[in-house]
Length: 328
Image (cartoon, rainbow, N blue to C red; front, side, top):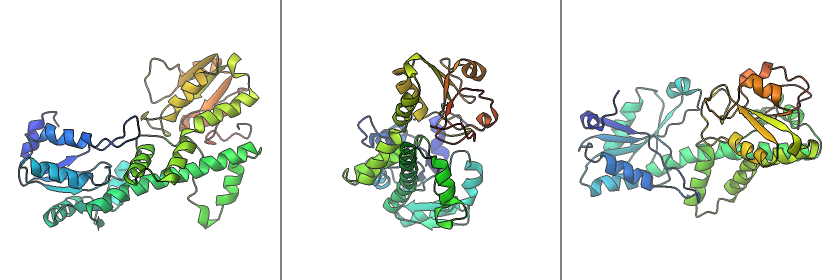
């Protein structure tokens, strides 16, 4: 384990976990991959296998191969997308099939041999097909979450409990078993990859844009609903959980911070707490519970399920704390 890039020259196989993010205008940033090649070209050598592992804008694998060729570097290049869910990586890394896409037949053969060390199930693909496989997987989840969130809004606007309906939809009904719950659909992948797919399809992925508007609009929706019931301008409110998913310390692109920003424009005081994050602007959980006159569940950490909220109302779009009186 080292931070010395020179050791890259000693390896037969180089695995890159550099991906393509999006910029503030929702455009893919391929220059990240160009910068990666330029940063490490002095340490790469002919005959190596370069495996690109992170989510890429479609076409990036072959563009990396061309960049290397233009620099006189005869490497074999393959794209083998990482597909594990955060929190389940150690289990899924060996149980999930591995998608393997080499730019050449030798790259395909070598990459398949590498990933057979993890699993016997290999799915060979062309690079573009593998890139779209990864994007389609993530975008499908994002769209599913958007449908659940839209249904939550509809049910709530008509005075119904979404989770009563969710139970009726899914209980012993096989065609709805995978229907997700409502919540903040966030994190470093799903939104980004939906926008990447849209950019790839000439910004005509209308379903993806609609999903983005719904999911990114959830914090504003819950605040607007709360403002109908409570005098927010006079209140101290608390947000429990600031990471993007339950029982995780990953706060990247968490919508809890968007919720905080909106609440700060509406409320007297906003307190935030999270057992997995060390942030000087946060307050300890006991202090948040003691001072808040209204609570929002930002991330459904399991520790919140057994809390005693007393008479403090709780807005819980996740249905995480499982109390009948906790509702929108």
